[in-house]
Length: 61
Image 1: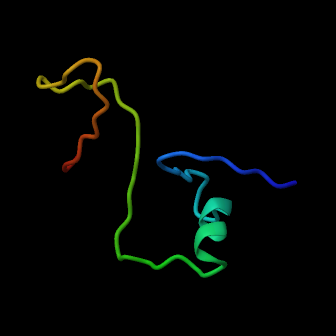
Image 2 (image 1 turned 180 degrees about the vertical axis):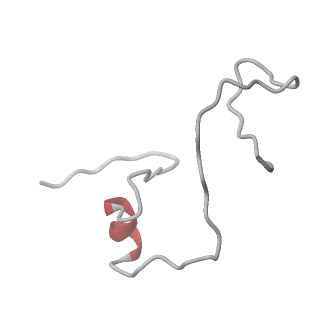
């Protein structure tokens, strides 16, 4: 099956072994950049939070 879509951007958020990435860049292995990202959920809300905006909070702990 072939699919064609037109748009201003393409977001391929389908993981490390992304089909989108493979279609765009070929079957090469990703390049390790010497850092890791840990994500988690919390009920803590910083005092400078602006409702309606998506934010990412980074820091120790």
